[in-house]
Amino acid sequence: MPSINWAKNHVVSYETLKELEEELDPQAFFRINRSELVHRPFIEKLDRPDKNSICISLHGFPEQLITSQALTAAFRNWLEF
Image (tube, rainbow, N blue to C red; front, side, top):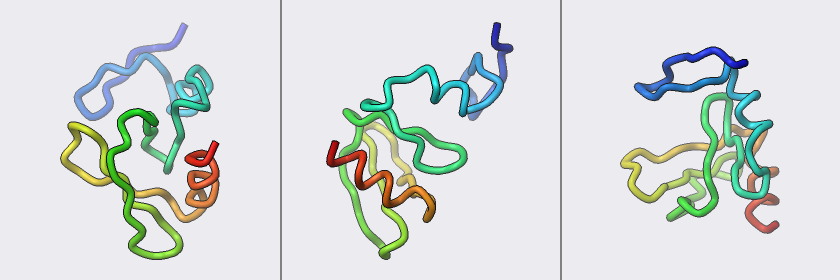
């Protein structure tokens, strides 16, 4: 059974983000960097500040999230799925 951890003021019952990622539907959720997952229906806007990253705006979330350089191409492919 997973233990309970605090992450950004939210209770998370997984030891790692990888464990959580493995439980989620890969068509609906994508890990954009080491510390963040996005849920496809909440993606509001995408910006390309450069060829190596994508800035993501989510409904109801004031901050933009940024893909890691290593995952940007995979994220673009996931969006086209």
